[in-house]
Amino acid sequence: MIENQVKEVHRTGFNRGFSSGPKPVEQGKEYDVNVTEISRRGDGIARIQGFVIFVKGGQVGQNVKVKITQVGNRFATAEVVQ
Image (cartoon, rainbow, N blue to C red; front, side, top):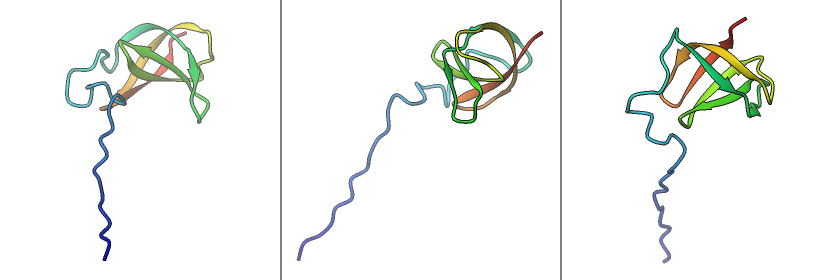
């Protein structure tokens, strides 16, 4: 009889240690960011010290000031400040 073995898979590099440590952004504060990608939902993606920021309505190539609306364990959301 052959037994199937299940190996535990460790995922590394995805959250870069931010899930339990301090985040480089704070809710309600404003930051200058560069939008480098677009998410599957159509929002811009920027990063501050490797921490992902989803920018509502952001477009690739924009250098914008954003206000952080929510901070999670692995990412934050923000809106462009007019």
